[in-house]
Amino acid sequence: MFSFDQITAAFPGFRYEAIDINGTPGAIVDRDQILSVAQMLRDEFGFRHIVDGLGIDRFERKMRFEMTYNLRNLDTKERVFLKVRCDERDPHLPSLTKIWGGTGWHEREAYDMYGIVFDGHADLRRMYMPEEYEHHPLRKDFPLTGVPGSIPLPVDTTFTDRLN
Image (cartoon, rainbow, N blue to C red; front, side, top):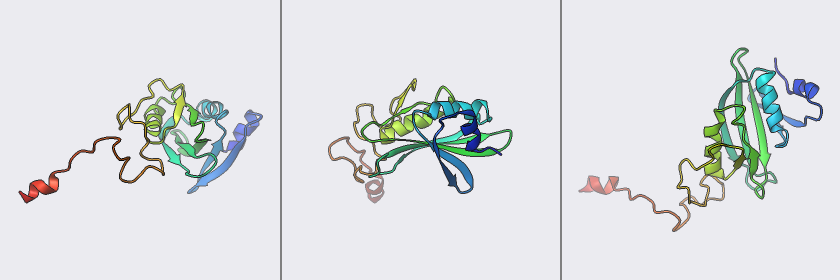
């Protein structure tokens, strides 16, 4: 069974904080080491499948934004979580698209919704919001009713149409 201690043995200087998510092991890794660790997880330990990736706003914490990658070894059926954090003043993380091509969609979504910039991503553009929109709707400080005047909302006539 895989453990991050195996990476520590093979990669001197590897720093991580061990986590456990409902019995699944994981690690919070420094952003300057994420590419090396991800490469090792894929090449040395067989984690070739990315199940998903998601951005998280840890609002009011020093390292506000987090990207979590859910990885799977299809041969051994093991799963592992890999997390990396960045500060709001410097919301840059290295893109993992060169290691797992499937992370491209997840990183684009985190860019659009949280404003996390993935350095080295080949196609980093918004997915849901217009390209010129300067806000990020899933940030915890985003107003629930939207930013007044920032974007016209579609008119919902479903209810009024039923009345006529």
